[in-house]
Length: 382
Ligand code: NAD
Ligand code: MG
Image 1 (cartoon, rainbow, N blue to C red):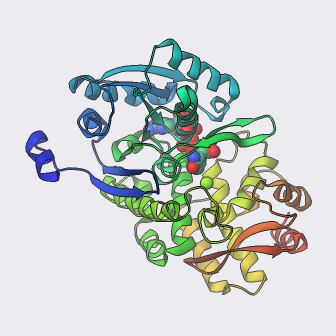
Image 2 (cartoon, protein in one colour; image 1 turned 90 degrees about the horizontal axis):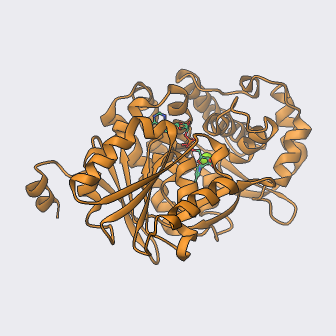
Image 3 (cartoon, rainbow, N blue to C red; image 1 turned 180 degrees about the vertical axis):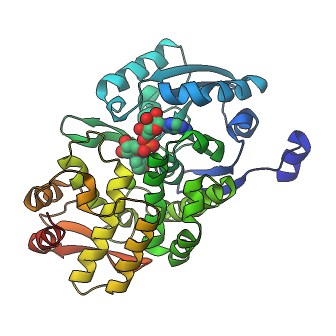
């Protein structure tokens, strides 16, 4: 089919990472210039030549015209729903607006929903697609690095409630993911760094070669080199596809999707303590959290200090946040620990933690006493 594609379009086909699940399979297409030919790339998987694009105002201004033009070129009828940018749109009110609009457009069961945006749009549009008429076909066109390497793959969708983040949602796998490095050219450097933390996480969990690749190429990813960015996205997606293929619904207690939470117990606590007010991006919190997970592992005698030092050196070299101090406000160790105990990853009253034996070898542990966590945080000036 690649030869056919080349003959028809005169272009080199995008590289693909396959996600293979028990009841679904789909490709993550990765490369440059893909949104400009999204119509041709999606035609083989769309059940109907009709789609509704969900996006946010920022992304709409930058990239929606390119997408709509390429859909029109291939005779795909498209309408759009545009929501405000930011985490605030992952709300019940916004979800209701999107689902009302979808229904008002007179869509059918075969009409696909396309998410064009970052993780907020992917989660919101994906949950709308999962819910309307009990499930519409769904396409992800992630436009942030975080969404390209993490949130667009794996089928988790959802919104926030007043009780917490991502508490209302569904598993709804896309039929295709289009990760176009052209989208990243307009992304602020702070958002690029935040997404980069999730690439690094993949290497630290189970792929020491990926970590070494990051040491050699991380600066080029952040500098905007499209070929290196595409390589990074493919590597991270291949990693996530493997994990998700092995544990689609996070049912394995120890070594499946749970490992993807490396650094996240700390990150969620930091984000929650700062009340998600925008001073700390999720990926920034993850960078700090990754290093804290290494430092905790070192304190518990599980990991050599040299590995934690190497992670810290890499984060620093790329200008990433590394310490709780970098959050820019005073946080208390006991308040952070209290957040961790409320984390939804908690099981039978013990904090379930992802720790490391070394770079590229993470494991889950349910035996971490909160005193060890508090001592670590206090040693970090908390
Ligand atoms: P986001 O979607 O809010 O995007 C960040 C900002 O960048 C927004 O202001 C957006 O308008 C802007 N933006 C997006 N693309 C742009 C582009 N190409 N050029 C310029 N600006 C652009 O945030 P995010 O970091 O992409 O995603 C965070 C969300 O993802 C969180 O809600 C998180 O819970 C969710 N998430 C979900 C999963 C999952 O598996 N479903 C995994 C990780 C994170
Ligand atoms: Mg994350």
